[in-house]
Image (cartoon, rainbow, N blue to C red):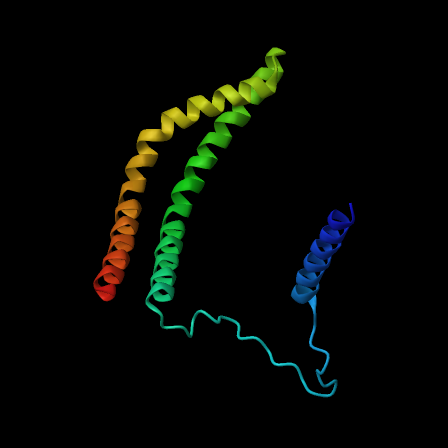
Length: 143
């Protein structure tokens, strides 16, 4: 009994010590000294190959997002117009407008799928090529 209580107390002290070590602040910090400002982008100054690769991947993904945003917005507007028309028709007919909207969404998404995928091929191919080039550059640099 004594051993288990002692073991529990030691375990609790260790856990509390670890938690305290994680949240402890330096006690000898001068009050009058101005605090150092953290750099805005610490990773921007790094030249490590993985950091550079991730920055290039992020840039490629952002370029893809910007290129596809108008395509997605156009499809969303078409679908929304179809949903609103279906809801208005359902209200006029005394049917459930939410069911009509759901059904209209599926129909409109299926109707615009071919055009949407055709418009997305260009930005998708560009993004895939950019990401493959970044990966190839990292592989070549690491050899």
